Amino acid sequence: MKPKDMNDEMTWYLNIATVFNVLGKRNESIALFKQLEEVATEKDKEFIQNSIRFVQEQ
Image (cartoon, rainbow, N blue to C red; front, side, top):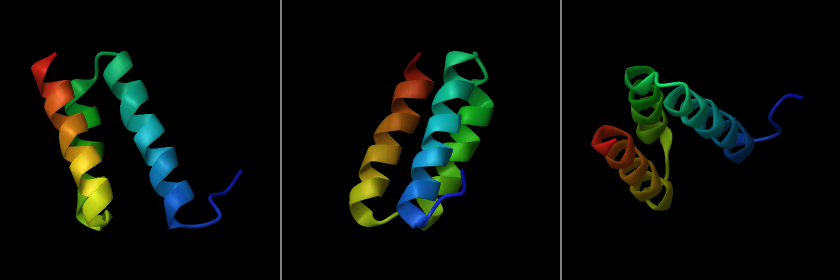
């Protein structure tokens, strides 16, 4: 299923970044989160930054 808008696309990428983290691919997860951070709104940036910190602290 193709994303219908930017929010759907960001959700898809957030899910992929989460899967990378679960699989132990933390560098890939952080890289994807950082790409998302570049296009995110201010509200979303805070969530993404918190996600990056969470992955780094594991």
